[in-house]
Image 1: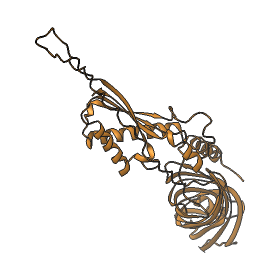
Image 2 (image 1 turned 45 degrees about the horizontal axis):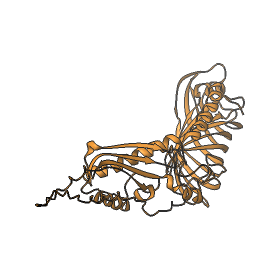
Image 3 (image 1 turned 60 degrees about the horizontal axis):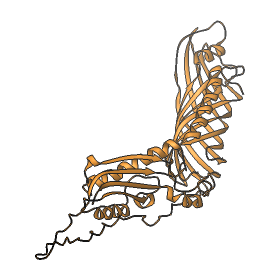
Image 4 (image 1 turned 180 degrees about the vertical axis):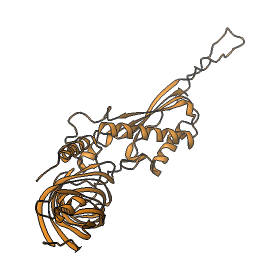
Length: 398
């Protein structure tokens, strides 16, 4: 396989960027480790050959090309099957047809040369996917393709073609970039741009590029969605009850008369209360929109504050350790801001007294070693449930 200097620089750059991105990307739902798939790709091919040089080689000495025109675009398609052997990597085998390109050259002495190129072959690619969200992924591929280039020539006037038909076979590189969207575990769609390096179809001919922009439908086998997280019962700690009033002390003066003087009531007692809400009660898994159960729990919390003077409220968002640290931090901030907005808009607490902070995965409730493992499994998700929560800290007076 022969690579141009530009492609030799491009291939390691593409692989390096994909591998680095996959190490820091948030985990994606429905991303199983091992499954086969097949698909169909249809797109537009744009051939980039030096048609003037090809025509000049066929005409030989003594003839001059006065004008040349061509049609470099045609429909391309590809049938492929692959195996996802790792969360981020798959091997893919395919058959491709890159369509045809044609050119017409006028010559002196007066004549004309018409040429046509058609390319078909097979390819073997390493395909890397980097999850961006639960449905979107970045796609990249590098591989080798073995292509047969068929060349058809015809001449008129002074141009006589000795060998009208010729075929060459050669193995070269191919690369591609694109996006993938998962409609369901068993149906994906890809939009890709690929480049094939191929020969021009004549013995000793030079190489050129064929660029393909395509849409693909991909059908995985045996793939299941990620398990739904267990919805725990609301974890709610009511505010402390108001203290009982102190007994009335009666001061007795010498009789008569008897004077009863009550002791003034104590100043209002300060309160500081931390209320913890389970993230599964407030939100759907990996989301920051409040569920109906979450609104009910926050409404009950507000009713228990009725009659108290609230000075400050701090809303803290917490996540478990699954996923990237930066992603978890952003999710905890978003959830804390959502709860703050609900307390202001629906519960009518003063916005100036409420602040929202995200703690990410920095303050887990579970103990070290209590929930073992790194791979997202139903058992590990259930064990880490206490870490996914929103705490509300209130200070004020009763």
